Image 1 (tube, rainbow, N blue to C red):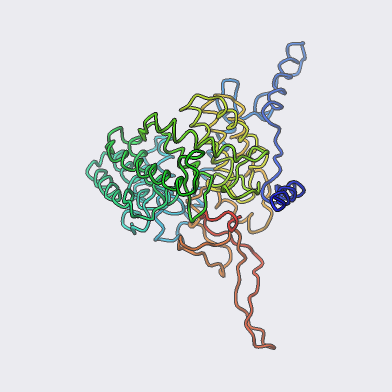
Image 2 (image 1 turned 180 degrees about the vertical axis):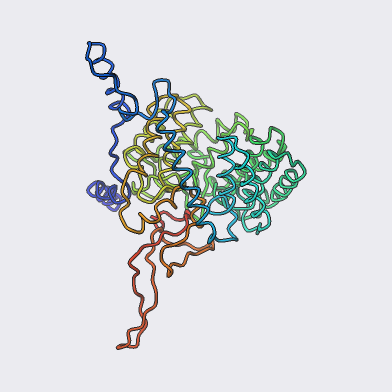
Length: 483
């Protein structure tokens, strides 16, 4: 008890300094303050003030009263996308040719161009996506089976790209190969985890992705049900072993740790089980998923943030992978399924935490960067149509291009953090930098470059710290190591 209180007291005393170290102070007024300026301007005009009413752009609002994004803001985004694509393509010339994942590799690039095609309807982007799909399908390694980090990602994205190009034979071949991975997923003797990045939930995502993008029935319901059953049975087994069956009927762990967040934890798994396309029966949702969600909810910190794992009492991480930005998606989905206001209320409180502490210094990435945190605001806006969350999403994007990076290295390479899958595709500044390419390695999030130097007087070899720091490709590991 004394140790626990000590941790909490330490965080309370050093909380502001810790936040300053991990995130930028949010310089933007929240939506209520910005909107009140609009109302004040309108009131001034009503009283006969000769000054013209300021535009939304002048007042700092990125959208009009009807929620439509203003032209200047849209133009800024388009210009930035064009600039970053040019830099990305140049950087990809030195990228790891063997990384085919959606998380850090070539499938992520294909997915990026597929999304650009979806937004712009420009066929050039779809053909560019096809180029990268072909590259990935030639280099499948069979090591992992999930959408983000395994072969399921390249196969699922490939199937969608070929389908949009009306190449049905190639699309079906990708789907067939994807379904062949299922034996590994449902095998009872398998040591496969259940989480989203490397486990069964990540494979389930690939199946549901196909049914969403190509059409219902692309993957048969029986295949989906088999994967869902394996996830549920695994959760029930661990819950019994940990003697938590009554409090948390579905309990999951990764590397012997019961994580909470979206990447490795229960929030990501519960979110997938609540997807309508997963076809989980209402009894299982009510008697197993719902009480398990409530068990996780009760682990929330007073700040509104969530721990990285059930055993962690340090309120530090505000990332999609660990913390409120990932848990918020579980809560919004729970609100949709169970129609209880408590889930929406706590999702909104998560949003407040992200607004205060979510402009991360780590970079732009989805897993533990500002882009991933910005998605939480968009999710709430889609659910509630409250312009407050659209405003926050726009400001979260703007924030990372407003702040001056804290070092020369970041100024020179800051663009590389915008899109998580591009991390390996950027040419490094220092020739001494060596980036690990094996996903099994566990690098620190921020590791100093070192090089052996020989002291001629002592004749001894020692490590000399490089004057620049090098960020490794994003890989979510134990937050105590990664943080």
